[in-house]
Each structure stands twice: as C-alpha cells, then as structure tokens.
Amino acid sequence: MDPAIVKEHFDRIGCFRVLVMGRSNAGKTTILQRVCNTTDLPEVFNSKGEKRKIPFCDTKCANYSQRGYHSIEDELIFKSNRGFIFHDSRGFESGSENEMEVVRDFVADRATTLKLEKRIHAIWFCIPMTDYERAIMAAEEKFFNECNMGSVPVIVLLTKTDFLVSPAIGQLIDEGLSMKEAKLRAGDLAEWMLNYHKTRIINELDGLKCPPKDYLTLANMNQDDADCHPLLRCTTNALGDIELQQLLISTQQTNLVLNIECIVEK
Image (cartoon, rainbow, N blue to C red; front, side):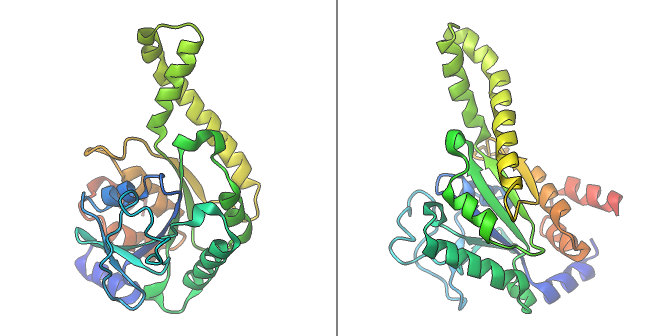
C-alpha cells in the first residue's frame, strides 16, 4: 500500500483493535504472538494509557483477573507490531451475569463509539478443541444470544485442533488396533472428528440470536512456523468496510501473500 494512504488510515482510525474472547486454555496468547510475529508477551496499558506492572500471560498469571488487576478495558500491545491493540475478556468463561454485563457493555460501547480510535473492529472468539465434548457452554450461549455486535464481525476460532489426534488414537486402540496401526490412521479419524464437531458447533451457534460471521480452525499455533495467514485473511473478508480492510492489511506489510491476494481482488 501507498505509505501516504497507510498513514491516513492510522491517523483517522488509529490501530486495528480486536477483542479476544474465550477460555483461559484456548491458546489466545499464542495466537496473538503469531499474528504479531513475536514470542514476547505484550505490554498492558489501562484505559488511561498507563502501563501496568502486572505481566500478561494465560498460564503464569491465571489469577490475574481474580486479583483485581484485569479489565476488559486494558489494552494489550506487542512491541513487534504496534498496529494492533487487543482486549481480552478473561474470566468470561464462568458465564456469571456480572461478567456478561461487563462484556455486553464493552461491546455495545466500543462497536458504536464516535471516537474512531477507541472502536473495536473485530472479535475473535476462541473455542479450544481440547474441550471438544463440551465446546459450547453457558458462557458461549449467553454471548451469542445477548450481545448485539452490530457491524463488528465475530469470528469463531476453533483452536488446538491438533489435540484431536490423541483421542483418535485412543479410540482406534479401543477398537482393537495396535499402537502403530492407530497412529497411522489417527490423522484421518482426527479430521473426521474435527469436521463433525465443527458442524455441530456451527449448527448450534448459527441458531442463536447473534451468530458469528465466520468460523476458522487453527492447529499447531505454538510452533515457530505456524501460519496465521488464514486468520488474517478470514478477518479481512469479514470486514464490511474497505477502509478497515486496508487498515488491517497495512499492519501486515510483511505478509506478501495477504497483500497480493487483496490487491488482485480489488
């Protein structure tokens, strides 16, 4: 993109802002690191722009929200890519009415605020396949029934889909296969399981009042060569505003494939 156009978008709208939702074991931090091409943790700023001293981490700081440090208003920013600002609705998974009200108010305010630099542009809702037997819980149902996202697209990310290989192996062994045979056939069964559960999740969420815009499966995001291109591409397609699409693409100047694809389409 023309650097002048990029600057114009950033000056008018600010950074591309994403609300990340999901359970504490959904791999949210890893996904954000991949998108921003880093292994470092983000800096955390409160709503006043003051840097917090408490580091952000799904595992080491599991009690972060419970200690009163966490707020959905907090801004998570990676030094490697300051074109993104992330918000995390940590604690949402318990599905309490108080937590739902916080999320509902935040989405309602940030989806329509006249302050363009504060507006959220997309929501990534992570559902880990480590919980494939109970993928949709009360918290998910409440969110997609009660939160009107307006024009902000919600993309459901089925994360950690590579986990399904393990129960696939166990099922094949239970059926009488040897360990060697089970490992050879586990990939096909795991793919079938993923398609089955993805279809079940889509059918359930699409039947609620405020369904997602799209669905995406992610695997092996903890590996150094993990590809976040499908996520960025899916998010770009979900945006209804060409200016926002250009803003998102501009944060990924090193992602030549994404840039070329969007240029060809336009």
